[in-house]
Length: 340
Ligand SMILES: Cc1cc2nc3c(=O)[nH]c(=O)nc-3n(C[C@H](O)[C@H](O)[C@H](O)COP(=O)(O)OP(=O)(O)OC[C@H]3O[C@@H](n4cnc5c(N)ncnc54)[C@H](O)[C@@H]3O)c2cc1C
Image (cartoon, rainbow, N blue to C red; front, side, top):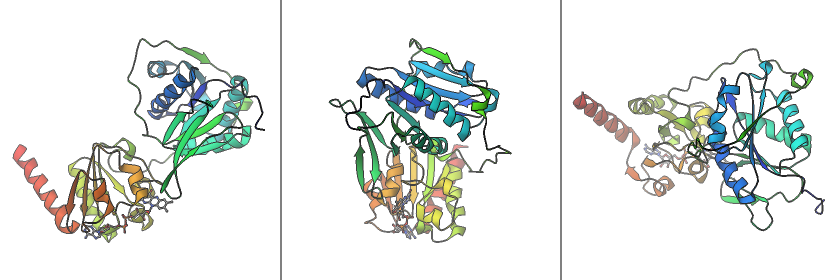
């Protein structure tokens, strides 16, 4: 296996995402990752876009780093479905033989990439926070937290192709738009039977988050076990509403059922990078920090002066949250009144 010739495999590919008929921003983040890798390897960067009526929405993909855009536009591809996506990707990989294929660690990426790994017999490193190229071996270096987030593992895939990873959403900023970039759009057509699915989507129920989805939120007020009781969520919610922000939570808080899992920040939850992150009654376990330490400004409120959260906080308030949070709310409301 070690001596196998992989020279036929060339190019970096990323799997774009279409949601509600629009190119989703994770596609641009993936292009930023892919561009860096493709430049180091001196190869093309390609993106696969699967959807319905998307042909006039592709310009930004080239302006943000793609050399080639492979488009599969068909009425049955309006939503992500495992069967047609797997069939399309398998056919494309067999035809074009990319050396690297990266998807976002979103629900879609986390679903389709393991299936692809099995289908084409390749490896997969899930949930990476960093990607690079080994200059000597020209192999993909995949970095991800391991052992409960206590160490960062660096993983290479010397055998089997493509080298496949999912990378955490928000782990890279999209490249700025460069309208002078030139690229190629390649429309691919597939036999209708290849696009059929064993699963039928009957309806879609959006979860009511309150505020922007966590990954997109500029202001996040997050709480942990220090809140003591589900009823106290209202207190934190009031603060979040003043900032027009979103609610985040530690795993302890979601495990206790105080708020749904979609609000969990951290290693096994969401990665966020808001302008302001207020951590209330959160100890700052390494697994929580993995999801929020890139926030622009971190404010921590904790009664324990030794709490690890203060290690990453720009501003720390040592005190009882049940005294501190109502005070902050009061002050902010007064200030809002003064401004009016
Ligand atoms: C594989 C793995 C994955 C994990 N993934 C995640 C993840 O994605 N996200 C995550 O958050 N955790 C994750 N964890 C769990 C993590 O290790 C911690 O257990 C968790 O983050 C602790 O949550 P917490 O800070 O709310 O609770 P605690 O650690 O119990 O901290 C509560 C804090 O509240 C403070 N406090 C108590 N009362 C008050 C008060 N009245 N006023 C002010 N402060 C007060 C305490 O001083 C304490 O610091 C993971 C663990 C593992 C092993």
